[in-house]
Amino acid sequence: MGVAGLTAESFDDGRTDVPAGVVGPVERVVVIGAGIAGLTVANALTRGGIECVVVEARDRIGGRLHTVNLAGSPVDLGGSWIHTPVGNPMRAFADQAGVRCRSANPLPELAGFDCSEGRRLSAAEVETNISMQLDDFPQARGHLLAELGPDASAADGIEAFVAGAGLAPGPARRARQGMRALVEGESADLAERQSLRWMWNEMEYEGHYFGDVPEGGYRRLVEAMAAGVDLRLGVDVAEVACSAGGVRVRSVDGTSEDGSHVVVTVPLGVLKRGAPHFRPALPPDRLAAIDRLGFGRYEKVALRFDEPFWRTAGLPHAMIFPRDSRAPAVWAIGLDAFGAGPVLVFQIFHSAAGHVLSAAPDDAAQWVLDLLAEAIGRSCPAPTAVAVTSWANDRYSGGAYTHIPPGANPADADLLGEPIGGRLLFAGEHTQSTRLAYADGAMTSGIREAKRLLGHPSVRLGPIQ
Image (cartoon, rainbow, N blue to C red; front, side, top):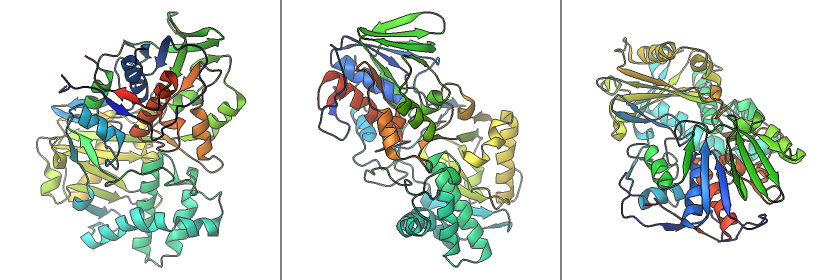
């Protein structure tokens, strides 16, 4: 993994305080979930001299950071970018772990195709559409909220923005489709279910939004964080019981792990289905926050070919506007541009996810290939390998990541990061509002809980030999 001989470095969660809320001596910590949040907690605690065990229901680590080998190409089926990498702790950890990263911004080579008009868009048309998505619409949020009110959805904002832009019918339709893709990509849900007020509420680091990707995929960072940690795979937790003297984590097969404290890092989608069972039950305010926050769909279809024919066809990366004017644009990213081989990854946003989730993998692949064939004007060769995600149907994720619908607010996520009873702690991207939905937000939530348990303003992270 390229980590031998490296030493730990100090990390914090963006704050210099020591979070409160822990009771009793911290003697043995059980962490539920081997995603990046749980692994970060365990890495820091182990380095801090605290006995810690991670139990994970899957037969692999990483959670929603899942890199597969697609016929020789590393492909991230969950999180893929380290967004805004300058000052980002995930990028700092990559440097510290000896994992090289490279720029992976598709925008300079992004092409567009409009299925309704049956034509390739000009570079100027693509640039105008992207500028509306990334600059004009976000900058207009303030006056749109003043017009629409604080309970407006992002869909309300899109309609008001397009209505006021004075666009011709074709550009107006593409503006709606592009901005719906933007919202569904960032929120993993329909624009109608994303609060306009809390869109773009997260703190940003520096650098480009698309930022970097770890060479070899996110698994290299996951493996570096897991190195030396006590892991138990295939442990499906059924119940978390807390008492005045400690905690007991019981799995569905009847085995259990005892500890002084427990950190629950299962995704919000799992909490929404009432798992695991907590004894005593979670307080009503936590249950209400879990219910109010959103957790939607974002899938991927990854196709490997013998050669990147889409590039020679003039579509290094593509933004395809479907005929259905209500459908968001579909993005296809050519990983060949970033050194990962002849792989094309279609980003399937929430409202289009039914094409993938209700279909066999071959049918899902054919759906995206039909879109691509229309865009390049000829049939596509058969892929040599296919990977299709099903995060929304996965019982250990229940969807993609968290967003804030109308009627919810960032305080709901922050509340989910507060301990209960001094022994029950939580981490994950859904337990903080500073970097909601981001892998680095999950990582810093793990740092926060390690700080809390160790009683230190910062923690040390690094592969443990």
